Length: 265
Ligand SMILES: O=C(O)C(=O)C[C@]1(C(=O)O)C=C[C@@H](O)C=C1
Image 1: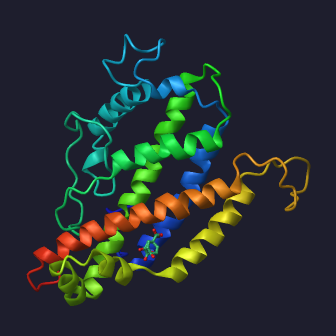
Image 2: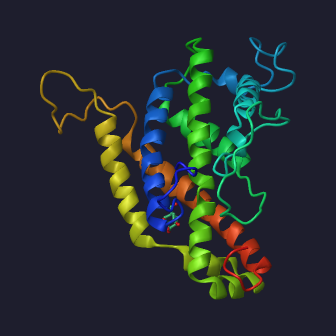
């Protein structure tokens, strides 16, 4: 989403959902890119021999991510309301600051630590072949792309939550004051949207993951998929949607508690 475009409201629920749909493509392609390299578990072990003298007590991935985020911070990446860094400390931007439209209420919700854990424990082992192929730089670069895309998608829940809050502030506020997180979860859940998403994802993983050879595309040629379809669907079902909802509930609870009766904060 380009928050700086004039004219169209970037914060309508339709536009926010359109961004979530586009991020499905980003995430699937990032996973396909990572899947071409072996697991390379040394990347995730801070005592691994190839790196332990150069990464200051971090794993190679953490170290490389920190270096990458330092460069991106200089280009003001983390001043954008939909971007969340995994590492710190980070330098100030070297570009002048932008003024983004005010939409989200101030909050410090950041679930990147959970995203890192789920990615390393549940994604890499399922999409990459076991073993070590020495492609450390390539694999870590793809890891960072996967992590950034997942982080953006999951923290986008804040925008969904704010639009939902604005459409029903009294009820969310009542539930927040009762600390009824299950009630908030129930109120924000749209099962039809979730079911449609999982079906769409299944089709996308099947189509994007195919090896296209010859002059015509064969929609039944599914034997050589670059990543297993069910891994992508499971990733969303078990992790991406629940973590997005966690972000939404955290946001709505705080938002509801602090609500002063005006829709704008
Ligand atoms: O689109 C919404 O309404 C959202 O809240 C996002 C989302 C998702 O993660 O995709 C999460 C909860 C809803 O049940 C449906 C979908």
